[in-house]
Length: 460
Image (tube, rainbow, N blue to C red; front, top):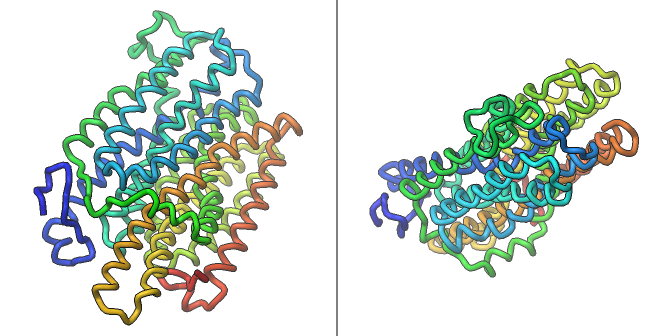
């Protein structure tokens, strides 16, 4: 194998226990750490507008409530679309190389935000365009998860992918915790001597410039590309023809789509429904959701992804009913508790559904070569790894649509009915559909097979 500090590693076999213990796990861990750093910042940039939008009226921007929700929602849509090309970038350009690029382009949304929020005369259409560039941060997840999936053996993918995703997801909490604080300080201000409307909105962008530079530096000097992860786009696009790709995409909208959508909408939802409550508390939602994600992956490793996902959707539905009740009663304490529970379930569901994906593709390929010997099995495992990596990114891209649909839904619901209840009822119906799909395709065979770590006897 080439030296571990070189850009490309040509010999990589994490399923070999001796290889893994001698050097594989150390290299994988180093790449995971810097992948988390870059992804964390990507998520932070992606969700900047969830906080900035709440402060625009105070700063003199005359946008309607629905328009503010659109500013929150559009980065989710662009982030979702960006995940499609990002999915295939790792196997085309290399995980390290793409991390360098994907981190570097985050200077665009941060510096653009810093400039335009200083000008209250900015028309809505232009501000919407600026907000859309934050979607570049949303693409990072797809390439990061695809990349890390190649570094770890199958028995550890749930935990490794859970950690990688959680480290990125916590970026949502970071931006919602730190941004309100730093917008009150003038130390980062470069554009004007006085704040706009009492807040330094431009700091929301400037605060990420140094972290982005650190992420780029770390990717250059401490990450690697794997030649074993090289694959043609044509071969990876085969996942589009797999029915389980689409089934899992739908289910993932229910879990990750809910996480990123609620994370984006939560601060503005608090401000519109409970005006006397500070939005500074909003970071708690994505924080508990992020911390719960590795737990979902770990439980899926031990019990089975389908079982955890099934019961988790029941919990999500119950929490949504709770949110519906308390938002109608205007009881903030109950609303907050129910929403935090809902966030926890989104995190657990993220981990469990993502754990199911590589298992599904592995079982598909192994079923084709059973009885054909170890060489055929090894080839099948490699093919499954490449295809599941593409599926992880593709499904993550579709799932991220929730980042647009949920905030947009809340905005339309408030505009039409005066409250978010209509949107919550629609989301509740969607969870029921996800629950039914999980049971139909992955659980209805038998309890024993459903509990298998690999796959709940999926009908492939």
